Image 1: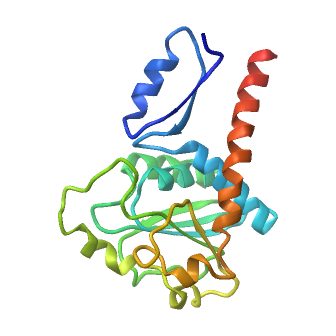
Image 2: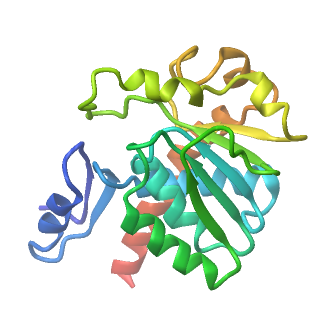
Image 3: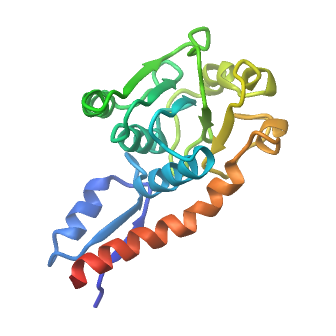
Amino acid sequence: MLDLLVARTSGPVEDMKLLSSQGGMPVINAMAAEEHPTQGICDLAAIQLARGSVDGTRLLYIGEGNNTATALAQGLSHYAGCQVTFLTPEGYGLPPGVLSAAAARGAAVGTTLEERHTMSRLPEHADIVYTTRWQTTGTSKKDPAWREAFRPFFIDAGLLDRWHGTRFMHDLPAHRGEEVAGEVLDGPRSIAWSQARMKLSSAMAALEWIVTDRAG
């Protein structure tokens, strides 16, 4: 007998929807193959803490268009005046439907979301540079030479130096020397560790919101 269920899986989100349809039990998606909404809540909270506001954030996401990228697109599309750029290797981008839906929602509040596939097309400004592990938990890539496609998307100090005051985010755990240089992850512009601390409070907030709503 459960009041609610928290599920974290590498399987499809449809499995969680099936569970939630059994007797109306709330199911919190703590990660599925297609999306990672609780990570998105954490990330928005980390941006709010670092900048004082999510509105107006210029965020550059570099790497695979995975479930974390989907959560960022969906979350930031609700905030005003943001500029969100996804730089993803060709063939490893966000699901087209996700990006188009988020872009349409963002347009209503003056937020733009776009995707590019080459590091030669960096945005003029970036308040936040965000990356994740190249090998997403519970997944594998069909192309055995996929690392070659990802190599140009490595984040080092030289990249961050293109913009003044840019902060670095990572959903952790990280592979130093693969998607990001250790000097960036552990450097003064990284907020990855305060971002990680937000995971607990964000999860608690999601639980409280659902329990309170049902009690009311």
